[in-house]
Amino acid sequence: MIRWNRSDMPDFLMLYYSYILEYCISFREISQRFTNL
Image (cartoon, rainbow, N blue to C red; front, side, top):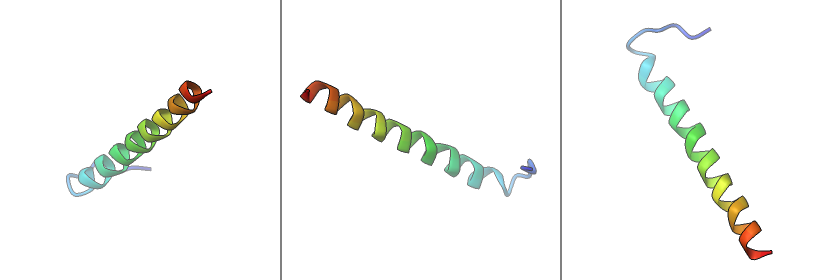
């Protein structure tokens, strides 16, 4: 489980932003493939 300590918050935010970044990149790639069809 995630302990909500202030020292753990930056790591959690980094993980969250990395997931969002990967999702956005994959979404852009998929949209480009659909436009190239």
